[in-house]
Image (cartoon, rainbow, N blue to C red; front, side):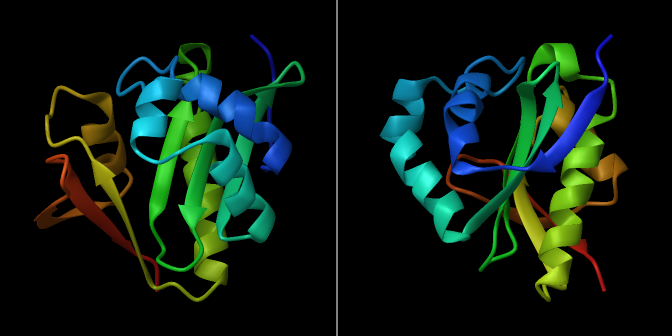
Length: 151
């Protein structure tokens, strides 16, 4: 097993992040599916360069194996994704913790994210176990909106 390291994401990490998004065990999105949602490597990288979309990556053997990005303005955890080989090593928790700490440092007192409403999907229990609570709202895709109070 490789040692995982964590660092702030750069615009140069975006192509690897897009690839990983298509390889996740659950809730994978291909390049084409991301494009249909208005997400491209170019606009993702532009958001990172502008500082609007801050992220952290997990690396093993010099390559990105997972990431978490959040929206500076809204306090939304936009995405957390890992390659299957990086699961169950604490990478997801570490990436989420780094993102929560960053957003808290910007003054956010409440963070939110969209999460599968199906208890059979791993993310459903993952976030709730870490203290995220349902708001009772759902997004356009039918996912639960969860929140975390950080003050």
